[in-house]
Image (tube, rainbow, N blue to C red):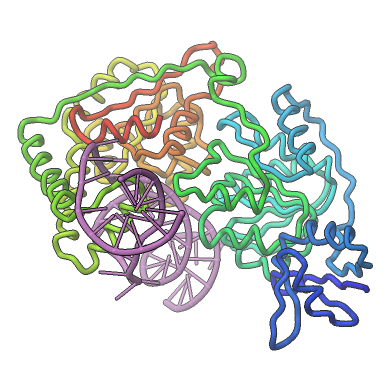
Length: 450
DNA sequence: TTGACTCAACATCCTTTGCTACAA
DNA sequence: TTGTAGGTTTCCATGTTGAGTCA
């Protein structure tokens, strides 16, 4: 029996000369369409299916484009932990996720992996900014043209960098063309739509890079299926002091003003009252999701959610935080500071009050570049931002971070901390201030992210 | 080529103690 | 008796991004 494998529209088509439908359907992951009689499997099962067919003694007529090998080399000298991470990935059969802190040189490891594999490679990244950074790195490192999907360009080369969005749009087409896919910030692959990217490529070798693999919604399990398990992780604290700056986290509790306290208690009370009287218990994010759905048809649920929103606004944007920030700015006159908030309104308030340049999603690309450039050169020593600079942007190094407000996300916190961890020329310590409104739900939020 | 716009997608959003029906 | 799963169906608000369209 000869089995033919081919890539077709993001799936793997499985044909046999004497069409034995039952035999085909018995292959793991293969489904037979009863009308057309064609058998298909998700593209990412390609390597696995080849192995199974081999075990079952079938002849395989493999028409998936076999990626030609490239001749690549690199001058990079890997640090010990980078070498260990790469070895762990090889030992896992070139499938898996490396969890390393921001600034630990994930790109370098990926480049070494590309050299070791020397097959056509797609690098998938979440933002245009990262697309450009990767492209520059790869062009500097390799003597071959680098392709690009995204940011207004659609050029395929043996080594191509793509945004997640473009990879999703092109997967139908090019899903069979690569031997290795590198997913930068691989936690994004857990998004419902993005998971398809992992499914629609045949690449047997897969490398995921992230600073925080686990997702609160559990979708890292899907990533494990698509890319491989977490095969290596190193913690910030393992590298701090040597490869990253040593740091301190200082938590500062502030009180609400009497007027804020009154409004907070009233709003939070409305929310808690609703929970008590509706018999709804909130133990997980999905419970909260139920509440949101309920708010679609239950006016009391809607009012409860709006009240919760008001309570959040009050505690996250408390006046006393602004006063505390003034002191911190005074104390760190000579330092380079990034201030983070959860809401853009507060960003603009702080920007006006302290004359600090602001960056939010509303800041155009050109202005954003200019501000960051001046920050890099020292013209500005402070920047205030909401979530824009959390990830996927090349932010010049600072040594003080002030988290005025944030979410309970461990990922967000890790990324913000990462912004001050580049090793300091003078060997100095970095510091992160975390401002928390006392006796509010923010205390819970703050402990969740740590 | 650029800028302004729209659109779809993604992420976070939650809290400590309880009701009800059903299966083991 | 004890333990466990649980429903309604597309979703309150805010922040952010990339792609696409059009002038």
